[in-house]
Image (cartoon, rainbow, N blue to C red; front, side):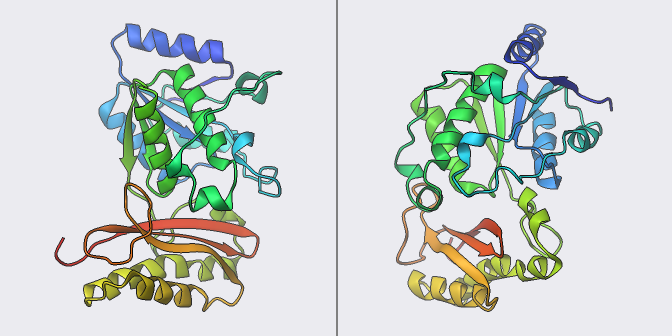
Length: 287
């Protein structure tokens, strides 16, 4: 495989996509903030299976970071990312400058709705406004036929789906399963922030979700009891700080009281200076 073409400007990216479409190619798009890992690469693989042309964006979007968050230290390694992508059939990498995405005087934003308000929306005010705005801009620039998102960022996936439906955007959203390390930790660019001890302790996130499924398998249906057991397991790590742990309806993210059909376990936990999120489908035996 060859190194992908790197495009820096909106004009270049649009010209590339329109040329590909004129040749009859379907464009598969994988939006990322770089610091690529196997989770991102699984999205690229999914795009390769369905599309003749694959485009990856690498852009650390400043508008989805709040005050005091990790924008400045978010890992950036474009050369390393390009070397990883060289092993895949990626036609182009769109790596725009801030001045291309947010030119002087920029003042138009996507107002996100109910699906963006709880959980991450509460913990990170303004986050999904920034996400939805940059994703809409990327869709307008790349003009993909299909776009690929990981289920690890589950609420983000629902926000993007809602935006695509509401604004009649001509792109199909593909959801791809969370990719995990062999010990179960969900892959994330932020995992590299973790010290060796924090990396070991981070397994409580995955373990707590496994515990939820085990309790349901044993016949427990009371969501409050299940989430309490999850919290207690996480707090075995004395320095862990829980932002939220919940069992929710998969499409609305509304908290459930009983588990009588498939639900989503969602959680956000801080370990030292690192905030990690994860989620997992929890199924009762009858489903």
